[in-house]
Image 1: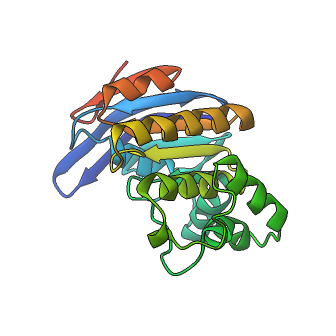
Image 2 (image 1 turned 90 degrees about the vertical axis):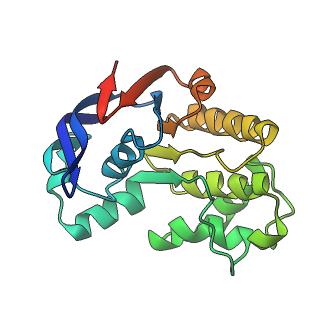
Length: 214
């Protein structure tokens, strides 16, 4: 489903990614582990269409997204990617229901029953009218998980998804991500500096100084 071919990325004079080659199949759950500054978040941003490589190609379902125009990348992110971030990135002034519904609205879909279903699946039934500030960190990340899956994307990108949670809550969230990803047959790419989280993945890939160690 995803194929990176000799991908390089520079920020100024800094060579952040150095000839990355990677294959991810449908239904894969892979973890990319490395220390801060190793290039793992940059790699995720390239796959997610939030940035472009300076050299090399990124193929998704056979299409080279690195050659997409800005409008095409926007549609790619909106329709085919689900993002889960460390700090939740919920919109603070709208409710749980509206936060989860947002990807559907961006894709011109009106499926309120689906929103209710996903809120229930992440264990937040009864919290639909709550605002993010009224939720715990773990509950906010549950909302973020539902939002990432609601529009049925092909790929889930999780960037340090439990980095701001306590260890017990983090395990609950990771169990939830893995369960829902398996049920919906998504490709999941997890970026983390916590090596124990690799136990959730089918395979672990290490990155150091912009180079994959497979």
